[in-house]
Length: 379
Image (cartoon, rainbow, N blue to C red; front, top):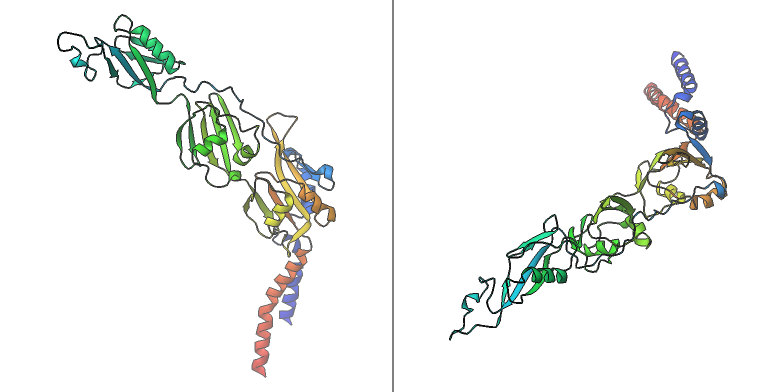
């Protein structure tokens, strides 16, 4: 008798403590009430029950980089390495050229054949200058090889008999870009035409590694910096502007994802399967509401959006959609998920009594087993 009284008292206490049972999260009513009372966070709750309530799709990134006119492909700048060959006839100025020692012809005549002297490699210094024997320091910044040849000929006038000069570039720094990160062949790439687009440079680097939707391209151009999702850049020619000499491109692995919380079929961080993903696809990827715990009428999306009233500021938004309504399935197909969204499945209020029954069952099961055992012994 005492045992049954104790069990009755225990079950009564469990029923009275129903509200304190563990839960996977708040219900729809609790979320709505909390959003209305927490004014200090500036929360805004939107009921997604009409097409007008569906948030607009993510804006395409603005063309942050100007498509500049391409500079000449043979313009010389700091860091470039030049090869200079000087051809002389008769008495040579650069007497250490190969064969120059035999300049005097047998019989006292002069050899009128041209002699070639290739000077040691010349690196353009940070000021844009090079230094040549007899010619001294020459300013070559922004000039082409043909213009430098003319400058050297004028500088050697009076020292050599009509010297002919040939200037070629051995190492090109000015007309190149640096590429790093998630590419097959990172390093310095020369722009042969200066009309290569940003995607062309990625192709020249051996292509990107992984999925384009998981990669962000960061471009550093002098004092400008721009970030583009690679998948968006490949699809939008307006963003895929021409690379400019001196650009630094870095491909960064940064997959888009959303978090799933509450009474869901699975709770985890889920990456976007494609560059764009709808709420309907996100619910499916999360396994939908848990059949035993979740409430299909209590599905929420938490996100930060740009605040038009305060430039540069973001405000929290909560979107509620009731998937027990037929029209919500169409609305969910036009609701685009964004990176770092939180998808929350509300807890069903009806699952609390079932939890009490489970606890009572767990409490009574040992007693029933003992009672059965005692009955067997007595018989």
